[in-house]
Length: 225
Image (cartoon, rainbow, N blue to C red):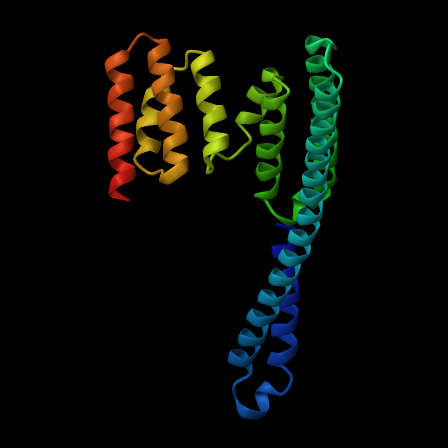
């Protein structure tokens, strides 16, 4: 958005300058100006896009490090518990859940660093909201998940699975149509995940035949890919 606006301004300025520069010498002022203006616009767009991508990648890298550190912390505590048998497994589980919640909340806080770049890319806000939605789902903060769903994207199977779960919990009548539509487009592991989830939901509804048909259709689709 902002990058496009700046690009248009720069492009117009370059077009005007070059039209009245050397272009008229060869009688191609307007054409030369248009070409130079378009090139300037593209350069600004590419440069701003690369800049924003670099900053967002830095944020996602920080989040990845937080989650990797969480995994190492969990592994260490499990090893300590195994080396000292007799401790309360329930207490250990509660401690691990607290550690996980703290790390996820830290990751959510990190995503706020991307907000300053929303004005540069109109899709970035939805990308960050999708990430936040996934993190809040891990926290079981379903109120925030539902709040963010309308501002998120569902191109990947993980986000789509979250949407399907929430639609099932809220008894959304559009669930079946969504699942059937998306199952026709998914492939490989993504198809297996959504087909398994949808068949599980059908089983919860006591629709055994429908669950079996969903799994069979998913297997047939994967075998044909």
